[in-house]
Amino acid sequence: MRTAPRTHRGLWPTAHVLSGVVGHSPRPRKGGGREPGPAKRYKTGTTACRAEHAGEQAGAVITDIILVIAAALLVGVYVSWRAGRIDRLHARVRLARAALDVALLRRSSVALELASSGLLDPATSLLLAGAVHESRGGGVMDGERPRDLAESDLTRALRAAFSQPDFRASLDGKDGADELLAEVEAAAHQVFLARKFYNDAVSATRDARRRPLARLLRLAGKAEMPEFFEMDDSLIAEKAGSLG
Image (cartoon, rainbow, N blue to C red; front, side, top):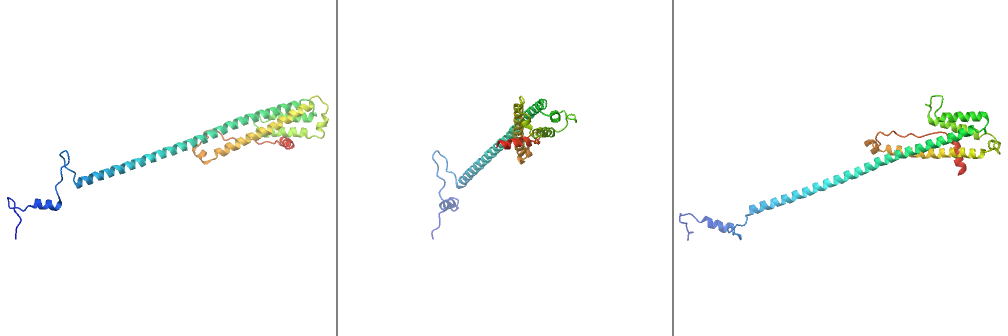
């Protein structure tokens, strides 16, 4: 049997055998370097995968941040719009109340003119003049009587004067009677319209302030809750019904 050749030191050529089993040694690359081995290539691929995964995670985080910022901006715009709407409703209530005060003052002025015109009997004139005085804050309780009650008394005094039997017939032929009565009726009807407009504005404002978001964030600030103005205006309602 032929034996394998020995080396100069009597050792088996294990390097050549292993080289034949494992493979050739790495071939030199252009430029004098060697190609990376399998372990190095695996390490490089793992690093690239990790970098790609980290980039995807960073992109997802940036997307989430953008969505959160966009949602916060939308919520802020909506809250700002709600707060602005409540402010506008409060401004509307103030304007409506000013118009109502003007209408009430106008009605008391023409009612006082009617009471002092001499067209009514003394008892009716005195009753009407007293109601006008109380509606202007000159009641027996130093002006602390509620405004709506005083205005209701003036309405009832006007209704008592206009509901007298043959009231209009008794004024026929008297100078300026028709014009004065028309002014009283027009002023009373204006009060009816102004009060209705004011109460509608109050209702819209109270509804807006009672929304959960408005109550939670106190969008109304320190503004007081507006109150309805209730009074007896049946004389105006009859006129409005007759016009319809």
